[in-house]
Image (cartoon, rainbow, N blue to C red; front, side, top):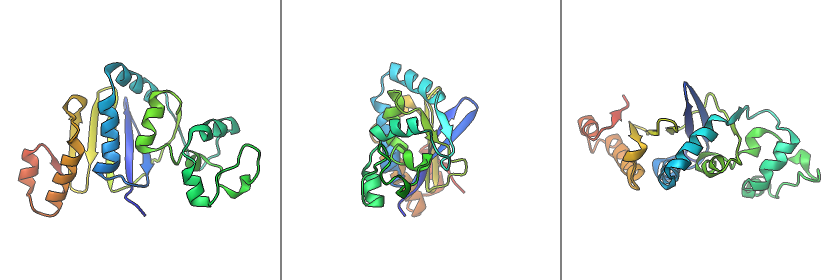
Length: 199
């Protein structure tokens, strides 16, 4: 079943959730988000904030127009289709079309989590599935306007400004979450480190 999680974008007063089915732990999805942020220069952060605000959030169970299906199939990672259905998709000519789900969820399946971020930055990804009731083991939210990253683990919550992030941010968060969870460290220790403890 993997380790599911949620990557959220805070856009003004709105929040939009994107469900990620695999590897959502801090050293997986969390680190992917972290590394993307660390690579950005200031102009790219401004561009990212603008492009996130323009995203079209869609219902995963609805069908996209054919021109958008074709557009995203051009740069989606089709390895998922081969892995799931045994063969690569053949939508262009119609062959085998009925064998595969033809909805937004499946179209954007490999364009989630940290995989989506570079494509949002360059403007190619203009749609994301909004999972209103998304649930998972780990949660990450990014406010691109205020340059804030939040992470929620199994036992701890932490907020960082982009300027406070380092290469080790997520591995340290993961370790602290494990230590509190295993009772090797107590809640007072976590709070002194700047974490909020989930009760």
